[in-house]
Length: 180
Image 1 (cartoon, rainbow, N blue to C red):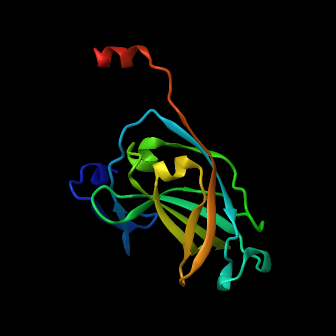
Image 2: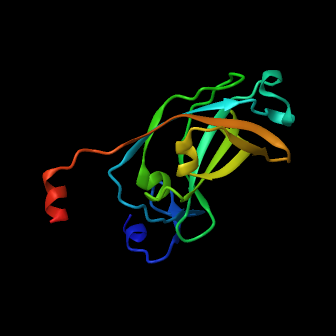
């Protein structure tokens, strides 16, 4: 833990050891990113519309387990970091369960920060991305259908943010002190 916390690099590779403390040939790479502090929570609910299953056919003709994966762009590179994954649903037009995310985690507190929405299919513990869209929080907050592009090309269906509500917490004593 000290090697990670003390690192000045954005990527740390560590050697793994076995139960007896002997080094193995295995390594683990951890990529570090800063997350903006935010007290604002966002309640989100998404629905899938006409999602394409495996092979590009409509979901109604396949047995795909659809998962919605939400990632935010790293602040120092073009990589995206996963911030939330929904449960897998086999419905034709899935309505994923509501969830809450902190604005700092979702988009660094910046409504124009890039966010990637990916519809994936899950089989066992393996995820395959079927379609995706790169948006921002402002687009999600509008509540309009977001068009997905299929990985193999062409349309991949739509994702509808059916609920997007920001919850600003009440100010506490320390908040007033900090503001002066």
